[in-house]
Length: 424
Image 1: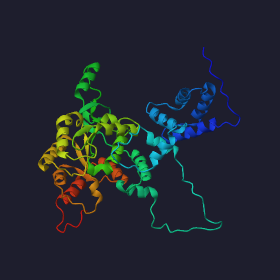
Image 2: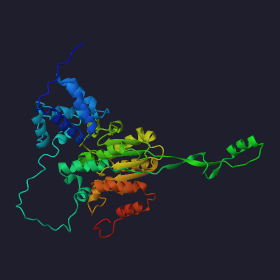
Image 3: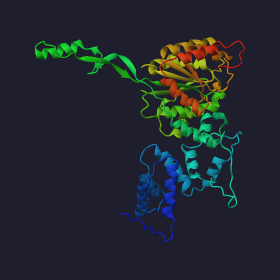
Image 4: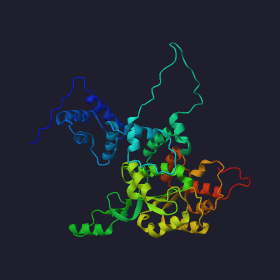
């Protein structure tokens, strides 16, 4: 039996305080760490000792990690917190601007940015108060907007790094509710509206053929699939990353009602990233999706990508009355007739086709591009996707039963007024 060395804790030791700060960093990085786990971790380290770094790692791992997706975040926070020789280098790499040169930058590991932000949380935020005693500062806030409201309306391309982080957290809380669809099949129900004569006659056999109660049936209900086709070409690079965060939140939302969420990316070719976005760790999910999608920030072939989807995937994922989200700016270099033909086939195969276009952020948007003209006649709804508020408006569109308002707006775009000043 191997005897572990005794843990000599000095009188003025800082180990308990450091474990407390480490627990705070884990909580900021997304791992739920409470006071009970913190006390257990301190007692476990005191009992086990830390003669080896590996023993210390697994002791804290056993106390703080409770789910498989938390392992990557824990490993990164542990490496950055507990005296990594390259700690300062990693921190400076997170803060300084990067210059793209001939050398390929090192690939960042999953959850590394989140761990660094958690460790730097609160740094340089408390500014000294330089006002003299008794001095008061007054300002007029009559026409000012709250920070959250400004963030909701701000364009993704105009956000800073801190604003993008807050926008990602806001997007993670967006839910896309959906109403169930009535099926043609029926099921027995005491509150049904259709008589079940077969069940009624079968029950009357127990009473000698005397019908005492008429059995009823009602139509079954099921939830549709949500299918998202996201453009990751160069013209959409400023928005596609935030929209993939939005799709990740939709894929992992609980109680939203969707039977399943299928996600695809396309630039010059179609890529299925559904299984990657099902990972609860958003950093690991987007990293795996980026590795599989090799056409990131490349060209755009919308017509060819829709043709591949209609040929290989439509029968697999468009059943049960699926709703399709087409996320693109419509700037296509392929043949417009091919795009129109494939968009029409996609619309006929789905229950509803919704086009999310970040170009709608401009008030005077008009369909001048050939790709936009080819897509517009075949979509049910046409809305913007450049801000948090525009993505929140998508929930209202999905719950709206009628399409008359959307159709009227589409007709106004296809047939603009004579002066052509703006689209309303």
